[in-house]
Length: 149
Length: 149
DNA sequence: TACAATTTTTGACACAGTCCAAAATCAGGG
DNA sequence: CCCTGATTTTGGACTGTGTCAAAAATTGTA
Image 1 (cartoon, each protein chain N blue to C red):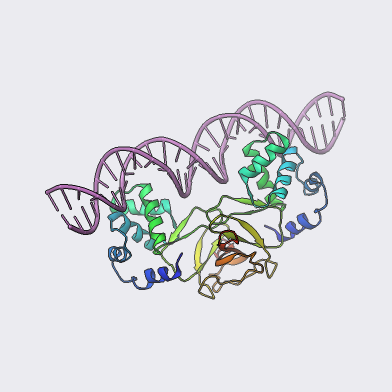
Image 2 (cartoon, rainbow over the protein chains, first blue to last red):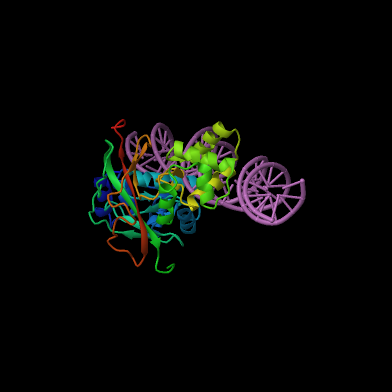
């Protein structure tokens, strides 16, 4: 994803109404999209189904397909980041553009953000890039959280 | 997974018959298990279904459940490592114990091993461990392979 | 050879993500 | 404010991946 776009999305709009943010990015504004964006903001690292439940609680009805579609659109314009730790379904967060990493508990699945020491992608250098053009080093820290130790 | 166990599995058995390796680890030897181990060795980073196809080609018949069971057992005893890059099903490899990382093409999905500069887990230090006991820093390098650039 | 334990098979199920046609909504222009 | 074209949402079906469970088969030991 474009890091620049993500920063635009996050920095220039952090105090705008969701509808305005969408409009400024050329995305049609609908009640469903606003509700999904709100749900992602309220529940960092939520799964699509958790977002579905949250939106249903807030606007009454939305289809599962629409949640998936909207998350895809929001990811595409850089408002939402999609992560997927090993063994987990996809999770979504609105903290974008800073290349932060995550830390996951092997026991209970708790998940937290970890700032990237470098801040920009890719933040690590592969010992052998195999001729690839690398644009991201995705890091996940695994271990036991304070509660599960 | 126990790094020591993985090294035992990989180093002390790299020239033994698969059946002997299994027996030495206290795992009951069956034709299915030997075939799955062979398939993983022959096809690094294969998915469970690819391993299923390979085993069916080699020993004629095996159930999907048995492949999943066997992979689980082999992972448990440190003979096989299970990885799951974002957006991919689980993949299996017999290169264990060296904490190597992976590099994945965003376009075609090609996947290669990348040696870990440190060699042991965890090879990175989180900027803030949130009180976790960290035992692994899983790194995936993303970009475009030489063919897709 | 017999038997207990374990593994495999078979089929069903659950979860997560995608596909698709019809219906509904949005946005802009008149 | 209404109309219309474009887009989105809905509802249901489908696919892929992993798990569950009971019955059948196999392994290994005595």
